[in-house]
Amino acid sequence: MSISEISLYKALKQKLGDDAAAELVEFVANEVRTEIDNKTSLFLTKADKIELIEKMNNDKIELLAKLNNLHEKIGNDKVELIDRINKSKTETIIWIVGIGVLQFILTLLTKLFFNV
Image (cartoon, rainbow, N blue to C red):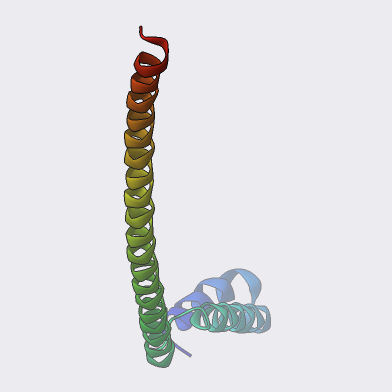
């Protein structure tokens, strides 16, 4: 018996008697041990901590790899988008120049045939 159990036993012995006090102290001690065992299972052991750190490191490596892949994809998409914009600019300039040339030709033809 521990000191606290002995103190509890002495206090209960005066009110409940010898046998009842001993049974009650034993019951309380068993309940306390059971509760401590239940709470102890919730503690993080060193092995649990190491496993958790390893999982975190693996997740970190996986996330970094995904981030790098995403960065590369964004870079590729950016290059493709710039190429499409440049192509659209070139086509727009060709159309504008073509319309200007056509307008010039039509103006010349109008002056030549209709003497305006």
